[in-house]
Image 1: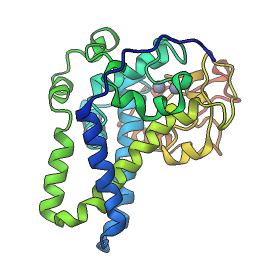
Image 2: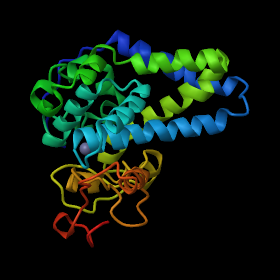
Image 3: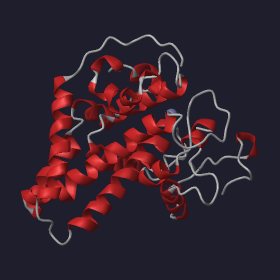
Image 4: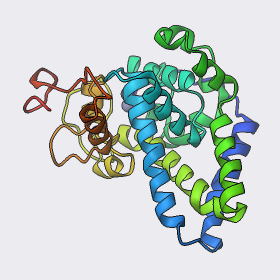
Length: 280
Ligand SMILES: [Zn+2]
Ligand SMILES: [Zn+2]
């Protein structure tokens, strides 16, 4: 176990209250009647916010794994923001810090501080992150006015979605149709930081300088993000599942965008990165 400097803990009552409320609303879905459209709508929203996060926030914004028109980028990022996962600037800064210092002192959410810390503890603790880190780590995004607006109003897309869905579907439909898929996705993406860096799960294919692991069931739940050892081996790759059986819906979606002419300069792994054969 690597020795680490403990961060100055500063638990955030606001973030804790937010987490308790959204998780309670999601759980309340199991005690309320579901309208007939609830299940397909919940599954559809889960996939939409999942693709927004893995393709938009992660592969596109953080790693520039492909290029696309600005409206596609904004659409993906806005859908990802329905999960209330902070703002794109802060998300990208925290994630780039993770790749710069993976599983050593300085990594914001490594399980070297414990599984719970990596899963959710760091999110509840304001002392774990620096609100201004984007100035250092996201200079390429620093001039984007929409992303700066989302720093101030990071819950804006989520609040608008709740009001619109509440007024159109009825407020009692929100737990099943909105909060359940949102919270399920939040937990799936938290598992990438905890499960996919924890030696009790999955396996390592590449000898990366971190604890990252490929975990198939996180790959399924997090739409390809679970092939995390592959990701750390070549972070700029648009493709996380490097062989056909490594299920990667995020990659399938990028291929769809490319087929529609909406994604160009798509980066894929080669033998140099440890791929068995150049990926298409
Ligand atoms: Zn990682
Ligand atoms: Zn990454």
